[in-house]
Image (tube, rainbow, N blue to C red):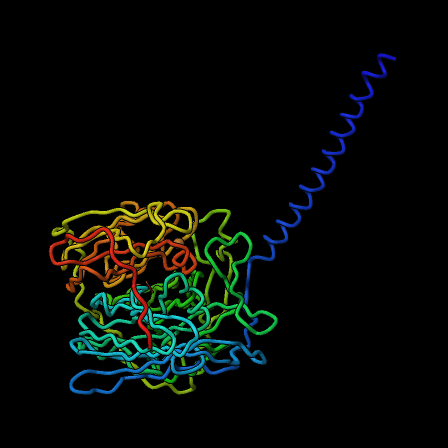
Length: 510
Ligand code: C2O
Ligand code: CU
Ligand code: CU
């Protein structure tokens, strides 16, 4: 009796344990299968599947109008519907049109003014990414434009020829507005670029704005991140200048492509399907000293590269994005590191207009010189919501910099991939983990991809537009990270002193 009384609970215990183990094993098996399926579904490839049936849209070239010596542009942000993917109606935002905006062209030394009207139902801002200008004109979260209002920044263009861009920057809502279609290119000329460099807009000098999108059942853009994707929204199809499946008729022997990664989170590694080499002639802030031959160029969100590629009469070749090395190890796949895309088909005419040989020297670009550095700061981007553990606070000043001074910013990132951007400046990458940067990071840069765990030393010469009240931003250009707080603010003041806190922007009505 006593023995059965003792063994009965024990048997019950064993049975329970056995039952739990079986359930546990089943749950684990289901989880492994689910994980495996997610894993194997997760590598996206559109290689060989893009029909290339639509001519690449060329954003309208807008040179503004000169009024009393000021070059004046007008931009209106509005909602629309567009058939971007054949047969699919997508609600969009655009500047002066349903998607993206015109290419604004301006020259060094000119005074410019942009009249930005907001016809959206939500507050927006317009930021001139890569431009050196006063903070009040910079268009960050401190310059909100309410629905129905017009904002009119003005500044003098004072930097070398470059491919810059503009996009909204409203506090905590940048990803949504860029995803909906608000972005455009800015071309700065300086009268010093060699004539031999292809420069006929839309003919042999072509903007290539690459954006990834997925379309939901109702035609709208998918705006949620996939499971295990910590970088943000990764689309499974591409739009180039808003064109789905684009081709470009090439009529010259050589063509200059101004590549802009206008995506919210995706990193690309551009090259050609036949691995033909190309010349890298410019980076974010302008031309390199000399062309560099490459066969791949990795661009994270916000970065630009100007490349020149040669074509033969009658041939076609495809600009492709190869799996980018994100430096994330096993997480690589969930962040798009195994994805490949056909981007744009180049169709060379049977007879090509001869192009000049690429000049050996492109621009005056001295080696970075750290002699006059007055200060070194370091910033750590870890996780997805803060810098140095501090989430963005629109009233907090994280750094005060002396106008015109030079600093070293040591930047590192961890947790996932990041793309570090600083407003108002073009910096130089001094080193990565102590080593000289690769050729594509030796030019003028305003945005740099941070491989997890590596240390980037950036040499930054700050602008000369002191302002004690309105800050510039530095942040991760993965827009979800930016919106979630991976952003800081710096003031540029005459003496390098300034307040720790400022007032939040107040709303300006129509
Ligand atoms: Cu392209 Cu602060 O942004
Ligand atoms: Cu910027
Ligand atoms: Cu980030």
